[in-house]
Image (cartoon, rainbow, N blue to C red; front, side, top):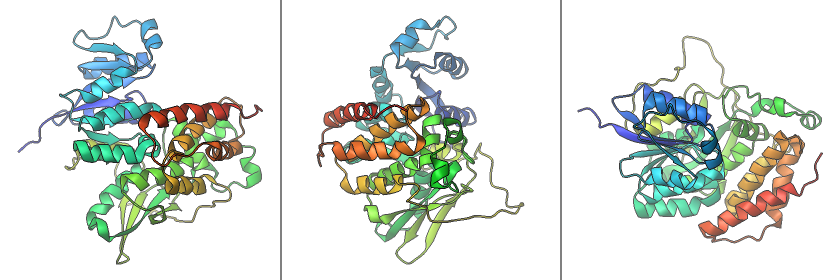
Length: 387
């Protein structure tokens, strides 16, 4: 029996995850449909997507950008909504079956929260949701019956590998890291890194913020925190290993010593499709691995002296409470200052630690309190001296 068509709301459809998701949807018209799309200010790209996919609604969260753009070519059957509040509108729509949360940063939290509150299946690419509010989100999902399926390649791999055993049989998970472009750099070389250097990732094609996070290994720190709440693990059950080929996306070790790994080409369309079609599997639009050619898989421990973000991630995963929100906001602000030429590459992580240590920690914050701390942490990073 053919599966029903799933209506998908793509929050952040013009970013790298969103555009890959639309490739997946386009390849499966009998099972997936783009019901709603959103962008912050990329109106031209969003219009092109609306013309191609004819969703019921599109949202531009930046009302100024929407007002300045000419929408005369928008198909008449597509409704345009403007303002960030409408991300929650489309996430709650009763016609929507799956919400792909692909907005980068804490800006994606409210839309994801609305989808979980509405009991949707949430394909979660926005790791910041779990970093900022992991305990609150997982508790809400338990109450509403929402299903969270991770899209991050590492967490998707863990999610898949965990199905090889019972939850109580999991000893630890091992998140793989490419090591980014600077894994062989000395401390002196890291001090000279430019924005252009940091944006040249050796294996993945991602947006600028995530690419820089990969270069500092802050992405792996955030993934440690995300995994802590997503899989209900203790921090000491989460390890990281550097794997430059990005073929093994992560591993799960069970209590008997067996390690189950998920392998695949470094293409985000694979975990996106898995999340959109779960629990089914479908023929993939991603390029498969070719075992007809020789390949080598390397693994090495990360150098935490040169990449101190990892230790910071473990500390925040252990602390919980408000620590994740502060770290995430401070990092987003520090990355922006680095891209603007106002911070050195090697100052990104120390600035995050400084802000984290200054904040008034609360072990059981509300969502409103987390949002206030998000704004506070960003302002604190702006106090660092400019170059």
